[in-house]
Image 1 (cartoon, rainbow, N blue to C red):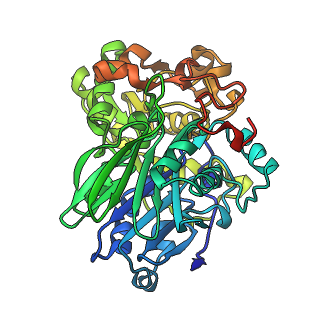
Image 2: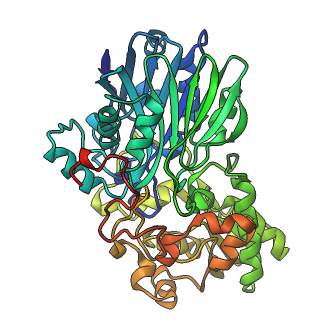
Length: 486
């Protein structure tokens, strides 16, 4: 039974693309006797920061999988009657930001499909770097696609292998073909599965309920439903969850792990724990490290809300400077906001952020943000602070310059979009109008992670990708090469 509905909009168009965005958030729950749809709804609320374009929940009742999804934020897609109608023993949920496939209702997730083992549902966080290659191979063997997402490629592969194998074996066989980032929650009519790619690009964790289990992109979703964090799902691991509990299966192994460092810098919620590190504490330490590296003469530290807040706290602590809210964020600018006309375009940022004159007037301001991508919004913020009377504005970033595209779930695929890839630091400083521009060093970024630093993907800062991406073809040895004719 498939249903879809809800209004939709394209959030990308509202504020431009001056921040990196990633693809999605996923959640799954196995808890017979519980209101699994409602618990999934609450968990998706906690993961809303990972995707605002669409949302969906699929529920399994032992006989079929029922789905409701639509375009928009979680509360816009679901009403009470939807949750009441989604009854079952297990559920998966998804919030989406599109990096592969357009922002369109047909691409909203979970995807629900029929295969040799009945109905199944799948939700995906990440991005396949060899999606185009696989899609062409599958099309050549007669595959049919209903969406433009790379997630449907995963569906197609798993369904093919399920014709001769049980689910864990079929998932492992499919993983041998997949290259890139994928954290998956998958629902059969009676069971829940969770899969993390062999490199561990995107986070995925396991939680315990009094009468069930949950998996989520971030631990904040477990907190939202009262589940206890158990552990991170290991890269390459396949979890099978049913009435007997949790069973771990091994998928293909990668030469190294490559957890996305931007999850810690910007993407994840500060209260989440990812692979052993609390995100907010990491950001605070990055701010302290930034202050150790650069300390221009200043009177006050001001964060760019909300992305620079934790790092600004760390900077102020280390530098012994006061931290003030010199920029006020309008938290009520939502999807119903009518974009300014071309004549009023300059008001766009001011409608979202407004300087506090009493805080910055006559002061030398350390402005702390997480990253600088295209520089358009940064220039407007600096100009606002100057108009409010700031004596000097030093732009301090808790990450190195972003100089390379990401193929693993961040929405930048072209270096031309990255200001640091085509301009020197001095040229950028002049462009944004700051008195100083300071980036955290790569060494400073990695220092808080200790031994775990070697397991992080920093390709957007260095160009050192975990595996060659120039031809975007698979690098892992397939179990059944005849399947795709490769």
